Length: 406
Image 1 (cartoon, rainbow, N blue to C red):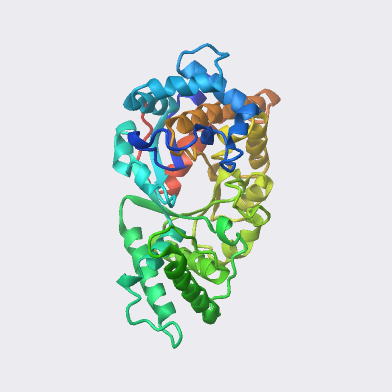
Image 2: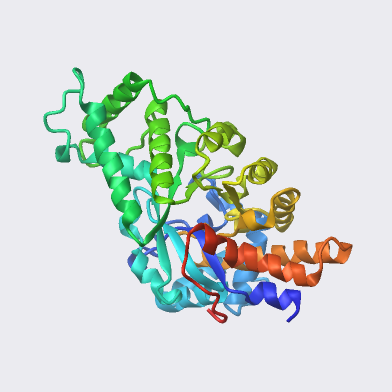
């Protein structure tokens, strides 16, 4: 089999994604979100970009429309399809055999299908990634379960939170469906996590402020975020200790994301101290850390416990941008440290576009290496196996073998 055929046909483990919307919510969110992480008032501008033009052409081809079909016409066509048919077309053409889903996007959980629903596309090969900040927020959001009798002034609030949070994480780690944890501390207070675990007074104040804020502002019903640095850093340190205990990898959002991310603190280079402090924890740096891809590649080359993922860059970046990310990672990253994902979410097209574009980029980059004589075609095929399947199988301890045609 040629390298091209192999890259486009080999089954893949999607090591980081999110659930697809339920049918009744299929039009609740702007479809332009498949190609942009922008704010609601700017997201529609994404169709006037290289990623937007490329996505339109590929979706027109997928739905057997004229290649010059405009974005609004594509939306009308997809809206007219039966939802099961729409999902089936996209997911089957993606070549995804296994899904690892982070189902912790706050505020929209009720709009999305549960994990088991997605099994129809993967022969029930679906696993869960636990977003740890949401677990911590839930511990605060339902204070009646454990705040009763706790005095935030004289003490006890830290002990109550710590006990509830740790117990929840340990129970989740024992769940065979849970294959890893996920942190979005880059969105909250940045990746420069403080290793000082002795400043309990700051954590207590942060938890107390959070509880009072929830009671006063949310009234017990609204979604809120943990945004106190001492508490967020404590959450990260805690999950890393649990992950080491149960041998679970921890994914970190790094690089590009929604506009509320602290971009200056989203480079994984800020994580060097915690990577060194937790040598028995497997760190997975998501999204190619764009635009900090070389930082991610360096860390993966320097530390045995660091892996990188090149998800989300497709379809958010142009083809050239995607190739650049993969090439920068490959400048130094060991081949057994690289994994792939879609970061697919809400719309089945987000999975298809990420998959087809990633395969195009892999073929373009690897075939160029072969042409230059850096690697052989046989080695390029071996690398494809590693990037799309074998490395994720090992990192997440999955009992899977590649099944062609999924």
